[in-house]
Length: 323
Image 1 (cartoon, rainbow, N blue to C red):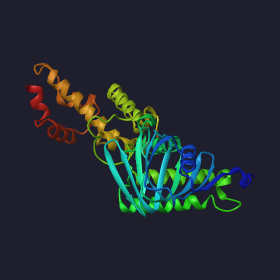
Image 2 (cartoon, rainbow, N blue to C red):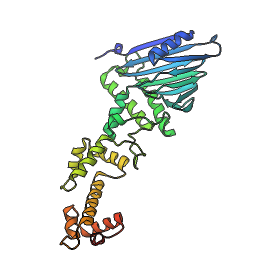
Image 3 (cartoon, one colour):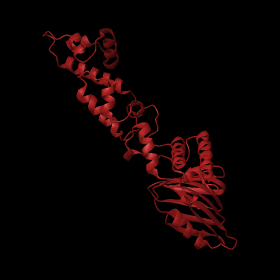
């Protein structure tokens, strides 16, 4: 069984501004520092613990500074215990006050400013979050991204804030639970769950079509292509799920988000469109009938088919055939 020595710890307490920001640089990311005010009463304390890619930090900084931070790729969430913090990214400025939760921007430079700072941080590999988001939603991992650095609601912020406290507690003591692999895996799950629940992202399972220009996940594209190519065959939901490469619940959620429908409803719509095209192309003087065309595309109940057709095209199938 791994001992507490499996947890790496780093602590620093200094009144030297340069030493403090060397520690911040080495722990977090390279940055350019602009100091404001006198360093005469400056104090900095940092306590960091990490294991298996998961890390927690407590930072206390008593001086007004501005940091221009290089892009980071792990996911950092933080609770401001005291002081004030402003994060600027991509033309947006977000002011954080005591008790607030923030997620630092990923993949692009950003700026942090504060006059006094007491910050509790959790850092987790983004790959762990992306993997869980993809499994839950069917989103292609390459298309996952967060869409804001503040929580979606006060309840989400409260949940995330409690999760940060819980994750810090797992690193406490001479025999921290997180040193054990089973607890570490659970801790990473807890961190990922908190981040995915609290902050908006592209895998959020909401009803409605994707925003204009948003790329559909690969699983949805595969399913659409499969249905389009095999709509004339006796497909089952199991066939469609197998073609998607993800589970049925994840596929349903992804279709609702990106197509505003379900896979089976999309199949019916494709088949209805094929009937419509065939009726448009048919010669009404031949023995072509609406019933035969509808049956060929899997519509056995004429009344339900006719109603769906009229709702979709504003006329009866017979009128289309004769036009």
